[in-house]
Image (tube, rainbow, N blue to C red; front, top):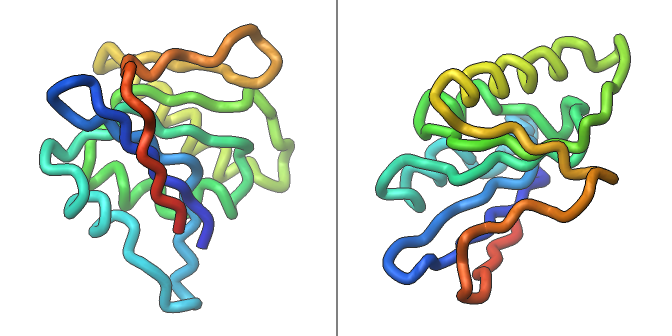
Length: 128
């Protein structure tokens, strides 16, 4: 199971970023969607960050979207080709939904500075 959760404090609230999502149901791992509902009382992710759109970095995205609102999507801009077309479509669908709700799509690889997290405090990092 590969994912990282970053929590940043903006002075009164924590904002959460989820980097990648790989729910390996066969390995008896953590239920990421349930864990996010426990960690995020407002049921909101500031951003879902996808390092690249392969299945081992997008698995479980549907389940996550059912339990939390993803406000923004940061991604590499990498087009993985036909082998990962179904997973890439899920990412594209998420980006479309986020934009409809007024959120942002940010391409983070090779296109200038990374987006700010709106927090002057240090990030607390949970890596599982």
